[in-house]
Length: 574
Image (cartoon, rainbow, N blue to C red; front, side, top):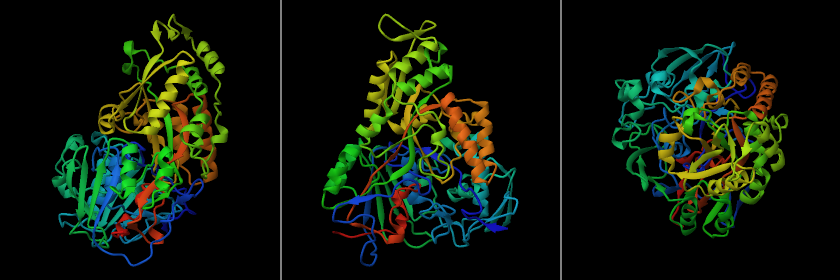
């Protein structure tokens, strides 16, 4: 048996979540990638705070979207994921470089032990871990959580990370042995980001009814294991978390957390400038200088592991007359050429983003964007491809085919100022080549339940956050994971890439994996599931009353890194 390390494995499953710099005020991410820039005023940047930690006080965390659920089995959006950082413990931690480590607040007592054939994982839990109702947290809870996630009847969006499990064996109350059906290189990191749920609370709920059960939506019925407990949820207004009296880990310094919900990003950031909130994890680029120039705030600004995209839907029933205008790959390639993505990065992101032509992040070990087609802005080429795909201009200037106008609705989450601007540009630039695109902003929490999870939309403007350092995104792009058992919300199907995702994660040889991902990038250029727009950063702002030690400073390049080790932070009254 061996301990997991970056050297021995191409670690990590991509727990992808809806990176709603939308709902989540935030982003999340993979291991170190991109440049590493901190900016701020004289009040400080990412450096450690002086003085000894003090106990007490209330931290107010700002967001512009409400949560959907706090049940980890169903969390698929950043807003819910942010709130879960306060209430749930993980099995393991990541250091700033993306390596698995064990911290005092992690449920595991040691790194996972992995058999020489890479298929068997042994997990040892801390014997003192317990739930907020005082019940012990044991191997039974881990096994119950994993069995539920991989049960298709439960409809968990995280199924692709764990459905390679063959058997699970309870060695004792604090030891579990998991054997996989095959080598799955990202599995160690999939375990790292696991947040278990209590078997004794949920064991009698039918898996098919679990998603609608009160656990995760009713604070009084949501038993957790983290440093704070959920006390109140005033929808569209705020959530409250109090220090967990039964918490088994190091006692957090902060007594209470208020998760305050604003109407949009700009309002949220103004609240930071005024001192009404302490943390803003997604400052709009146009407000960045105002925050930097405010005397009581500091900013950490780095590229994150999230990428924005325009996603097509390939299920005909989402369109009038069951006519899907995106069927022909040439049509999708034409939309690529019709959009000036470079100008979006320059004018909207103010140069803080990087163009992407595939779902593989720049400046990572698996960066294969040079193997994808670089769709430069070329409206003339777009028009030619549309003509080749059979589209003809109608009397009103809008393209038509088989008696159907080329018209579709582009959904995005209301309150996201960046997406509002991008959607408007997409509308204008597509109109110039004869396509009628109608942007529509929707409340995020409603959007997730009613449109994204069931795959009921025509096109969406959204982003994915890759929560671990491995590029496996099978759950998003494989036809094995159509709704509700996965995150392929656009019903994309490509048998060739379906196989390549499996090949990519079935080896621990990174050179081989990168070659496979390069082929996926090429295939996605020929048969695009999305228009990949750019990788982007979400500047995070903190008032100077928030303090941390250097080893616990926010790590914007990591999943939920703007709350990195929040249980160790403390507050002052300054």
